[in-house]
Image (cartoon, rainbow, N blue to C red; front, side):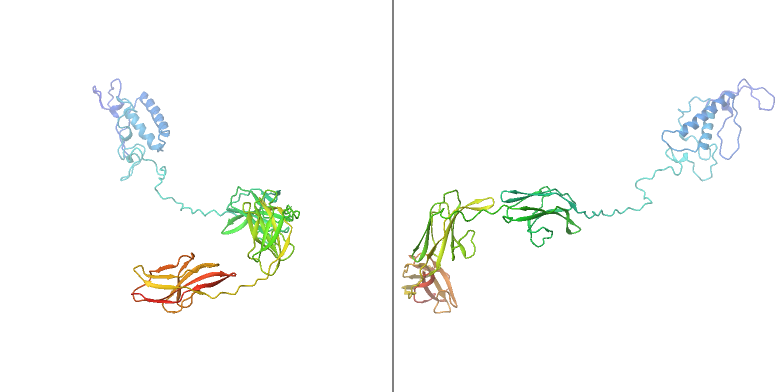
Length: 477
């Protein structure tokens, strides 16, 4: 710092007058903590300026932009000392190069620094008073981790939903209000023959359907009993704590269903003729006068013949629209009086509807006298070994009633037959009566086989042996 030259100055107390102005800088020095020193000499203008500057600096420290807290006592004294020393210097207070760290430890005005302790300023410009630091996110907090309990859904309260039932032809339309509970599984649509429909199902209750789509609230019941009053209820079922429970329920609604279509139209609409052909009834009828899908031929042991079949009735034939108007009942029992009736039916949304029907007519079947079973015809037979294997050839026996040839063999039974007896296996079944040759390639050298061929046929509804070969024996070479 530049100093002005002294002009014949004399020490105070000698009565010697000083020159015109005494410079403050000539008598200032840094104030050390805890020590006494030379008093500051100031002029009146300098003192006033210093007072204003100290006040301004103190106010500025209180409202520092960075928001850091300061010690009012120490900062006021320090800034006063700084202002006093720099009042007449060549640089301003805000432009001073060492403004933030001009003082050394223990040399701050107004602060009694203890030996070995650090001042606040010695910690750098970012240091702050104890208690002003904000905790970082990495530091542990005093509160323990909170454990969040799982949320348990409350048990749903039973709600009421609307329900209407109506008829669409022979079907019942069930229409109910939507239900939107937590854990929805399905709607249970219940039909009952009494006015106490329940879920789970009780007496007289039937499940019409289980609807898994929460938004679907209409169902058609095509199987409701015709011509009677039935009751409906809808229950929305939810899963709660592993159990199925009702969440919504409708009121009970009843409705009388449409009567079933009659199955006894005017007799004589279809013409009907019966005859015995080769011991069995043959049925003929006239064409159906309306649109239809099938003829239903019903046989009964009494004169009341209905369709659907009632007591003692049996549907013995079904003929399509292109199947003609006749039917041969080869299974009719012999020696019995039988009634027949033909129904002309059409398919509809509610099931089959009778379009027309014949009157019931009866016929008596002849007593069955079975023909005596013929003795089996002995067929010619030869067995030889070739490069193909064991070749079997036999005489044809394709008379009336022929069904098939059965080729049998055995290694242990010298009399193999059909149906197979002990130790016998069937190695071929040939349905063509003209095929009389078979090669057995499934043999090994050294084996001895017994072979036979039988002609099997139908004789009066029974399987009989029409022809049979003698047994042929061959050892494989």
